[in-house]
Image (tube, rainbow, N blue to C red; front, side, top):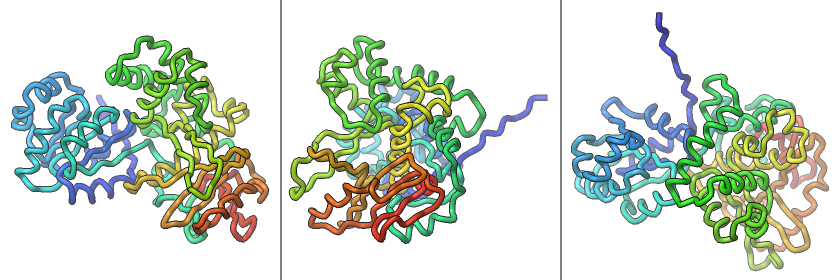
Length: 411
């Protein structure tokens, strides 16, 4: 007897945002890396009348590229079009169609290669499309908990105190090593094997389609070199020298990783009152599991005791904060601070004219000295909110009136 396999659906925080945006825009576009659940999310939300077509299908792609008008005659809205980047010729036709229909929610699109896609979208669909960047699973989604954009006010932190279970160090690094790909949480499978297939099947294939990479092995070395620099300040010359490529090539290749949603660059906070600021961004991978695979860690235990343990802890916290904003359809208002005197603050969140400084430390015993550089923000003509140290403490703990220790499981 053949048994039907039931695939578990993990509820995504972005569902409500997609529904709301679809009521205001004729077209909704979800962008992000491969295999993070874009299509699954839209299929889950789709009403029975909404059809689905993937441009991964060569026949559908050929029709969309060569006869876009016939494509829309064959596949009528309401419609989900998967991997829209394969047929940019469709975008002007979609524009004409929605202008004639004047209805909301006609087309739901997904796109993985945003490097060229977003240029086409801005040119063809300006004012007609709601764009939602998406990432892998957040902690809240994995635990099926409600969440909101992370803003470390006392009220928000106190409200989170009893929401989540405490994590020990072993649990944290198991989560970091596993990463955030939905497939790894739906069925048990070998993590290393999954990411090996992911890199070969999706990343290299997509990069080849985006640009001409003369030496694929060289690009592999570049990807590994970027992973080894997660949570570090970006130096293009050093990165290019280590890989054996030119600085312009390093910038071009890194822009592909950023636009594909694999890497994020956190810009330094700029203010005229702050002198001698460092201008280079910090680099972070957005999926710690992918980063661990690329840097050749084969277990969470080995990663936890490694020299990169702190860098992965910081990368994990930053990626979770970013996802907490993206999951509400908001741009993450985050920066970092570093000056020529080596004073550094890992993250700054700016909201409504208030700046919230954050330090990220893999420590179970945080002290107020870990936030000694927060006082540089007193130079600003802005209000400074509660300072926080995200760490491995067991509970939410005030260190001073304006400084609290926040356990990582509360992010």
